[in-house]
Structures are given as C-alpha cells and as structure tokens.
Length: 176
Image 1 (cartoon, one colour):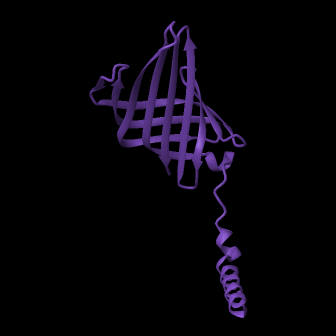
Image 2: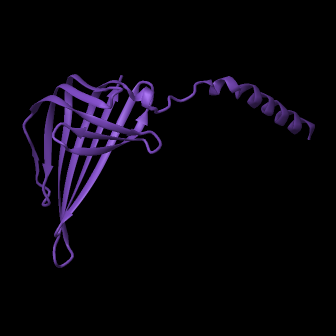
C-alpha cells in the first residue's frame, strides 16, 4: 500500500512541476479594433452556391456550384483605422458545377483582378466584420479564427423565393 501512495505522490509532484503557470504565459491574441487594423494577405477562397428546388410532391432537387481561388498574387485586404478597407491583387478561380442529376462540369480558369474598396464595421463581442463595398453590397462575415498571424472569415447567406432556396457560403483565409 505504501508503494501505491508513493507512486501517487510522485505522479502528483511531476504534474505540479510540469504544469507551471509560465506555460499559460502566451496569452491568446485578442480581437480588438486596434489589433484588427492591418494588411492581410489572402491565401484561400472558396464560394459555394447550392440551390434546392422543392417540387409540389415534396421531392427536392439540388445543384451546387463551387468556386475555388488559387495562385494569389499580392492579394491584400487592408483594414484602416478610419473603418475603410481596400482589396487588391490578382488570383485565379475555377468553378465546378454539380447538377442535380450528378453531372459535373469544371469551368475554365478565370483570372480575377481584384480592385475593391469600401467600409467595414467590427463587432468584437460577436466576432463579426461587416463589409460594405463601393457598390453598396453588404456582407457580414463571422471571424472563425483570429490570431496574431491568421484570420479566417466565413459567411452564409440563404435566400428563398417560391420553391427555390439558395444558400451561399464564402470562406476567406488570410495571413499577415
């Protein structure tokens, strides 16, 4: 029995020494209006559009379109302290369409010359950034990851009209 107590105490001592308070010294990088102001390099883009049609007999038919970005050349999103942003750079996209019958079509590579500007608002409590572009289009993005070196944004918009429901999801990943 003494041996069991000794092993227990030895294990407890190892855990106490191993779990030093200094290990927690790397406080996570907090989302704040000050920390958010920076230039972010886009390194991932995916836009999925899914349309589901519901027929009068209750059956459904779904088709999807997935656009993926690649070859990001100086694609920068600059968020300024005055709540303005600019997005510039070149990248490629390829769109893959999957029809309801299972037919898949891969489109041609498209070169996107990004030159956008607008305003943004940041809600640090809910981790949401809302972008309003120069044409007045508004999109709210959940900030799903925010560290000193990375930021990921995700948006999901669903619209329903008559028997058609369209869901659009957009994901951006950035480094800095």
